[in-house]
Image 1 (cartoon, rainbow, N blue to C red):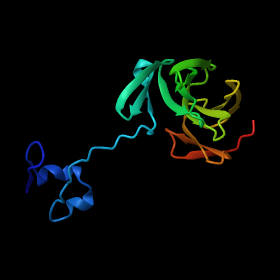
Image 2: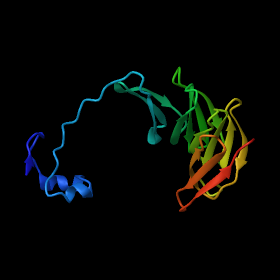
Image 3: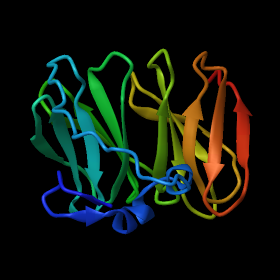
Image 4: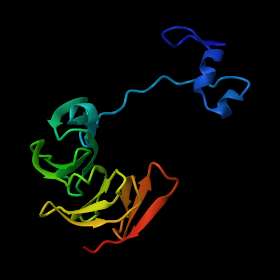
Amino acid sequence: RCLSDWSSDVCSSDLAAYLPQQLRDLPFLPDVPPSANPVCDASYPDVFQTVHTQALVTRISTCPFKIKVSIPVVTRPLQVVMTPDGSSALVTSFDNAVNFIDLATNTVTYTLMTDPSINPNGLAISPDGTRAYITSFNTNGGVAVIDLASRTIIATLSTNAYPQGVTITPDGSEIWITYRSEEHTSELQSLRH
């Protein structure tokens, strides 16, 4: 059976690789409805993307879908997270920096240079917007705790080597660390620094 509503005839055997297993087991291919045009809503949030090889953060509008601005940051940016109030974004740069972006002006307003032993990677911001937690992806490991008001590192928490991702529970009582080179996560109790 071939589908004729595509730009060229596509036969059932050609689609098999792209369908979930349960659909491939059917004696027929279900009709695939034409894609609908998405509804554009100006209240949709922007998307932020790091461009690791070009030392940029790209701000992308989702309505209409287009690049608004590319913001230069310190080399090898990895992750970007917005503060809960939406006024700023933090960007980790593997080359020993955390960039602070003012989202009203789309400019870097401050760059926190870290000690050479800290390679910022994972990033999470506390629900109350007072602290940021930055994993250091290297053999020393660790999580740098940043006070966002003063933009300074106020503590370093010990972890295993090569911590990568970090997330905070919604109540801010725990942070969870993931590791690329290990098959486990670590839970660190909160965080009164």
